Length: 270
Ligand SMILES: C[S@@+](CC[C@H](N)C(=O)[O-])C[C@H]1O[C@@H](n2cnc3c(N)ncnc32)[C@H](O)[C@@H]1O
Image (cartoon, rainbow, N blue to C red; front, top):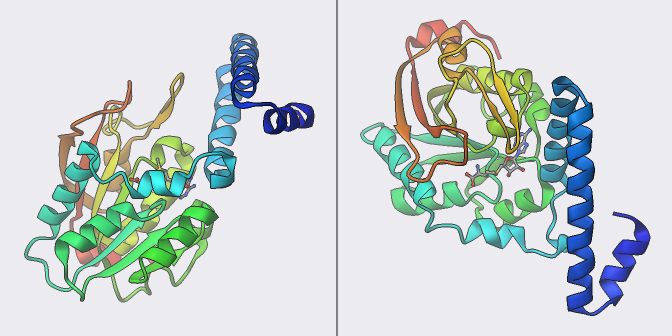
């Protein structure tokens, strides 16, 4: 949006500002549509992926909505509740538990898990690139060892979440890979597989057993071949469950995967 429009929206009273905002949205959708007709699919994918990536990284409450509170108070969401129940079930009867969430935002999933487990000995880790969400999480969840990084930072962090001798019991990725390009999502999953015993993905599973990712631009999402990737990384015992409220067109659900043989995974060096 141009500087003049931004200025007008600040000084013009509510109703008129809303009207300008609506005109701007309609105009940019029309531009978007004609651009999509002209460009090849690969160019659209590149542009969309970049746009979504930037929107997550730059998202800030100064843009009119307190998005940290929005996530923090989203504790009555059937999908989230189903994810927490699944995590609790998976962790049952395992002593000395550690949990990592990749793309945790403000950490509401870890907060709910911590409240439910109520066990001071559980270790929590979280990776989140958005600075505001990350700061909110570290202020409100002092028991979480966080990493303020995106996929490149996480994959390159040699001692995070832990050194080669230790392992995370459960890693969770929920609604994150759906926005990530195949190679980047695969790199993250490979590192999680090296460091975790169990992985829960809450993502689009429509092509989980295929060999390649697929991409949709309207609405924007990637479906990745999670089961094929995880098998390559030494994981098995796959269990799939539907989300109570699946996202549009994504065929989204939960996938629980377990490492097959520890010795095999130890062969990967961090
Ligand atoms: C739809 S939100 C999901 C948040 C959380 N997992 C949940 O279940 O509520 C996507 C999150 O992924 C984060 N994210 C976006 N790109 C990422 C990347 N490349 N690496 C790690 N996290 C990323 C965003 O900042 C955001 O917090």
